[in-house]
Every structure is written in C-alpha cells, then in structure tokens.
Image: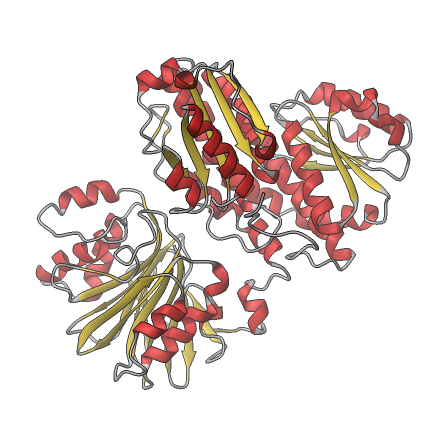
Amino acid sequence: MCGIIGYHGDQDALPIIQTGLQNLEYRGYDSAGVALHNGDISIEKCSGEVDELVQACPPSSEATCGIGHTRWSTHGLPTDANAHPHTDCTREVAVVHNGIIENYDALKADLADHEFTSETDTEVIPHLLEERLAAGDDPVDALTAVTDRLEGSYAVCATVEGYDGVYAARDDSPLVLGHGDDGTYLASDVTAFLEYTDQVTYLEDGDVAVIRDAVTLYRDGDRVDPPTETIEWEADAAEKSGYDHYMLKEIHEQPDALRQTIAGRIDQQAGTVDLDLDLPQEYLQSIEEIQIVACGTSNYAGEYAARLLGEFADVRTSVSIASEYAFDSGSDPWRTLTIAVTQSGETADTLSALRAANQAGARTLAVTNTLGSTVTREADDSVFIRAGPEIGVAATKTFASQVATLALVAVHIGRQRGTLTADQASTVLGNLQQLPGAVQQVLDDEAAVQSVAEEYADHDAFFFVGRQLGYPVALEGALKLKEISYDHAEGFASGELKHGPLALVTERTPVLATLTAGTEPEDTLNNVKEAQARGAPVIGASSMPDDEKYLDARFTVPDVGRVAPLVANVYWQLFAYHVAALKDRPIDKPRNLAKSVTVE
C-alpha cells in the first residue's frame, strides 16, 4: 500500500506523475516508481525518496500515459525489486496496487511456470493479466477476470503494451478519477492531482474503469456514465481528506487499518491464526515467561496484550517500560520470549531493551508498523501491524492495530500451547472480525463526543479509570488528552482511586470510566460512584445496561468481548481531539514531542 497516481492526456506524463507522487509523500512511503506507456512500456523504480526517483528518470518523455506509486512495505522489504510498478514475464503489463491480496500464495502456486522477481503479493496481478491476455481477453475483460480471483483489498491500476490507456479496478481500497482540460487523472486520493482539476469521480467497490481521452466506467458489468463532483478543498485539506487534522483523519481510518491488520490471518472456523512466524510449537510449549518491552502508547498496547497472553496462553507475562528494562537474571533465557513493540521500529529505548534480551540469549519478536526497520533486523522474528503510515504525532490507529496484532499473537500462542481451545479461539477471532464495524459505530457517534467535550473542556484535570483490560485503556486515554490538549490527565486502576487519587477529586475533575467486557464494569462503577459522591462528573464508555443513572454522560460501546475496551478507547481519542481543538492546540505536532523517538 500507499499512494497511486495515473494519467492519460495530451501532456508529457512523466512530470505529472512525478508531481503526483510528491503530492502523496505526506502519506509516508519507503519506495517509489513510475511506468510510462509510449508504444512500449518503460519502468523506473527505487527504494528511497521520490526525489531519488526523479533523479533516476530522464528530464522529460514523449509518453502521454503512465502510472506511478509510492510504496509502504507490507510484503517484502523496501528494495528496488519490491517497489512498484510490477510487470509480467513479457514486460508488456505494468501494475501498481494498494491493499493486501490475502490469497496470493495460492495464486502464486497456480502461476508456477511464471518467473517472479519480487517478494510482493502485488506481482501475482500482472502475471494473471498476462495469462488472460494470452487467452484472448482484452484488458477490461482480463482485469475483471483477475480481480474476481483476488481475495482481500485492492486498488489496481495497469497499463498494457498494445492498448491505449490506464485500466483500473477497486475493492475496499480507494481510487478517484480526475477530469481535467489536458487529460484524465487517477489516484488513491485527490491530493495527487488537485492542482490540475477539481472535477472528480469516486470509484466504488467492484468498479472497473478505462482512462483514455474520456473515461469509460463499468459498474456491476454495465457501462455507466461516471458521476462527477467538485472538490472544494484546498491542497492542505485534501492531504487530510477534508479533515482538519491528520489525527482526526487517522482516528477515522481505524476501521480500515484494523481490516488490514487481520486480513488473511484468521481462520475463525478452525480457531487458528497465521502470522508467518518462525516460532515452533515445541518452543512455544516450552516457554515459561513472556516479556514485553515498549514505550508510551506501545507500552499500553503491551499492557493490554499481557492480560490476553496470561489468559489465553497461561504464561507469566511482564511488561517493562523499555528505558527501565533489564533482563531478569532469575529468568531462563531459553524459555523466555521477549516481544518488542514499536510503531516506527526505530525507538531507541526499545531497541536497547531488545539488544539486552538478545544478549541474554532470549528469543525475540518485534511487533512494528515498519517493515525493514532496525527492530525487524535485530529481532529473531517480526510481525507487521499493517496500520499504514501515521502522520500525527499522537498515536491513534497504530495503537488499535498493535492491540489487534498482539491479540492475534496471544491466540496463536494459546492454541500452540494447548491452553486455548478451538471454540474459545473462534470466539475471540470472531470478536476481532467484528472490531472494524464496532469502531465505525463509535465514529458515527462523534457529534455526541464533541458535545460532551464542549461541556467539560474548561475543567481543571481529567482522571481516566478502568480495571483489567480497561486499565491500559485508561492510561492511553489520559496520555492522548495530555499530549494534545496540554491538560493535566492521569490514568488509574479504578480500584486505586480510594488509595490516594480521591484526594484530588472535585467538581472540576471529570472521571472517565471504561465499563465494558473485560473490565469488571460493576466494580469500576462502584469505584467511580465514590468520585461522583465527592462532586466529580462521571463520563462512561459503557456496554452495561441501565447504568445511565450513575453517569453524567454516557457513550455506548458495542459488545465485542475482550476487544470491547479497545472500542471504548476510540471515544477517548475523539474526546481528547475535540478538547484540544476547542483550545486551538497544534494537534498534529504537540509541543516538545516527536513521532519517532530515536534517542535514549
């Protein structure tokens, strides 16, 4: 995944595609490439920055048709070979793709007589197109037949030697057409071409489009007139898809991020998980301890995971702030698995902890959003959370994807150790599959959160509370609020309120409680009643029936079992965002903070 740009018109395609790729750089990427169609197809691609690609390309071309791509690695390291576009054995087809092809292993097996040159899932597409074209299909029929075989998500753009134009299809990954005076544009979002036109057509799932001098659009097999609309955003707003801040955009991207996280990894019927890990069953059955090391939001994801690992895998699990970590001399390194959780894969404190575990002889596993990062090179094994690039400094969608990924790890280890039955695993995996829809329900309730934020934004301090799985959510909720609003906020285990924090409670200190499955909600509610009795307003994110009378404000959380607290956390993200917005804080770049902390 990351960014797509295509063009067909009467101008030199090369600078238009290069500019489009530069306009998409804000999304994050590790590689870039371009394919130009001028009778034959020429491809230039490289790992690294778009500027490096520009330097590698000629200053101009005679091509008036082409496609380009910025890649964020999901299958295969960020290398020249893995960069898009990809081509077929004949080099007559060039393809760029966003999304994840869940059944690419099976498709690749069907293409055993083809020569593959990359590690990507995308490369099966040009080879499948090659076969259909050789069988006599035109590009539209070929693309339709190929996409019918793809399982997962995709936005595909192809250009084919001997055929004019760009051919595109989408399912669960965005593509938008731009209609300009000098040609037609195609991109993963309007930022890529907004300087050329504001007239657009958004493709829908299942659409197939042909971009030539005019657009031909096929929907449900029938040719339809492409509906157009006018984009009224400025370029900066377009980068944020119309949201005021990247953070809000990324909060709203969580359903898609979670779908990507679990895509192709779950067999609910069998109650199994496939994370492509090199952790033999014999080893997993032998471990006596799991250590999780992380910082900040990743640490709270680790706290959530530790509770799941203890429950599902019946193994002693500890969580250490990475800067405080030291391998326990009483632990047997041969029976210890150390999991390093870091969004960037470059967090200095987490890398130091990982190196200490490696030096002690423990087996190590990295959980990260960045393939090819330092943590993946230094850990024995790694699993990618697939959240996509996150621009806002305050982590949102990466926290959700970290927890979901670690839940998959916990289920896998539990199944391998025999401590989690197939039926139990199936229930958890079913909840994970419900998670994107549950998060969307919260996002649809944003207006209610904004209203509550307006009521309490001027208060003095905020206390987030929860038990069990609700405790790391309380810590994360408080962190989000203090990071971006600069308000004093603390997270507590709800049972600890009476052991000190109640001294701080007044009518000016709202208490925000997570009251869902996995949080002992009845006990938590009893704890917050003590705060309420001392004048504190109580805001609840709840799955409990009939608790409105105990809450000054209530948000409804869909019941999705052990991951319901993760859904509640989306309410706390939205609350933090709207409090900060009311105070006109620099939400995407809070003072004194950095996205990737690469110093100890």
